[in-house]
Amino acid sequence: MPFFGMFSNDIAIDLGTANTLIYMKGKGIVLNEPSIVTYDVSSRKIVAIGEEAKVMMGRVHKELNTIRPMRDGVIADFEIAEGMIRMFIKKISSNWMPARRIVVCVPSGITEVEKRAVRDTAEHAGAKEVHLISEPMAAAIGIGLDVFAPFGNMLIDVGGGTTEIAVIALSGITNGVSIRIAGDELTDAIIRFFRSNQNMLIGERTAEEIKCQVGSVMPLKEEVIIEVKGRDLVAGIPKITEVSSIEIREALNPPVAQMVEAVKVALEKTAPELSSDILERGIFLTGGGALIKGLDERIRVETGVPVHIAEDSLTAVAKGTGKVLEDLDKYRKVMLKR
Ligand code: ADP
Ligand code: MG
Image 1 (cartoon, rainbow, N blue to C red):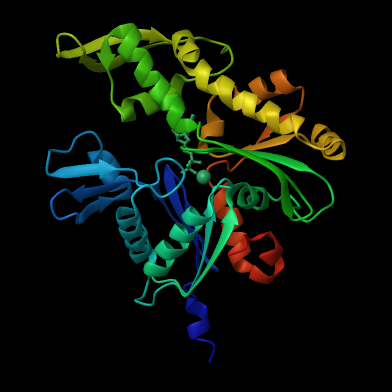
Image 2 (image 1 turned 180 degrees about the vertical axis):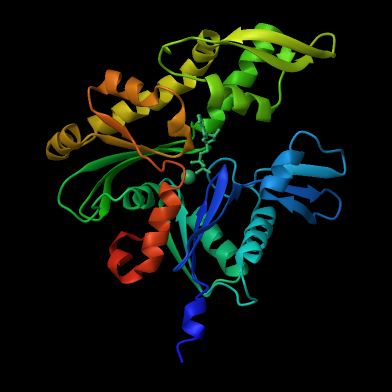
């Protein structure tokens, strides 16, 4: 009776700096929550994860701490990260059996030590078999590019902590650039703008909301003015101020310019045959950070290459990691070696 076979516990994890997604074999994406943990400072016991922890962010008292354990693209706090993964897995598991196989995607610039740490974390969380795949490769598979074919595809995944730029051909990344400037840096640029230009402190959540709603990197058809609430730096009291989308764009420019520069560097390092493939097929953008208004146009203007934003930008990596899990044999070649 093929009864037990139906309840495979194999999973794929997109352990992002901003969001964690879990794909369950045969089911698809079963969890999509912020990579955020609230824990008790003295006992280090986790009190909330994901959405629940995000609400607490910036609102906790001194006994509780809210952190993003993956902040810079790799595991910054092992113990907490492991606890978070364990709790996410528990949340989706319909039965007690721990996951047997886990495919995890990692930034392409990851070191051997960091790779080891991800493996250990997954093993401690209950995995019997751990496979690693690089994020841009997973993203490419997720949006349906043929990564085995003898032509070049350029993919840029803009996450929270890292921007991964990769040229993929013949099952491998022929040239990759990974920089630690992505969505978080854009949020930080907005916080800095309010501090230095408006004498005002705003929280990370507020800054992120402003970024998503009115943040842009190219002139908008209609520029807007918004009201922002925060705390006056000098008087220490709550304050409301008005800023325009033009000012926000100026604040975002330095990190955006660095991202575009990295794309240019990657293009310069690309072999001529691959360059012509990319010119013909365009650059593909994935990741939540790619949703900042005008990024596609900005890259197109500065590089002369067509740019496409993936439809399922925020889930591309998880979907690709899931496809690898569904067919480990087919994708063995594209996985990272030990
Ligand atoms: P990661 O893979 O690192 O977890 P994601 O691909 O989930 O990151 O993207 C998260 C980043 O995308 C965050 O910095 C978030 O603020 C940003 N983001 C999400 N939606 C938007 C949007 N509409 N506009 C601008 N940035 C966005
Ligand atoms: Mg990601």
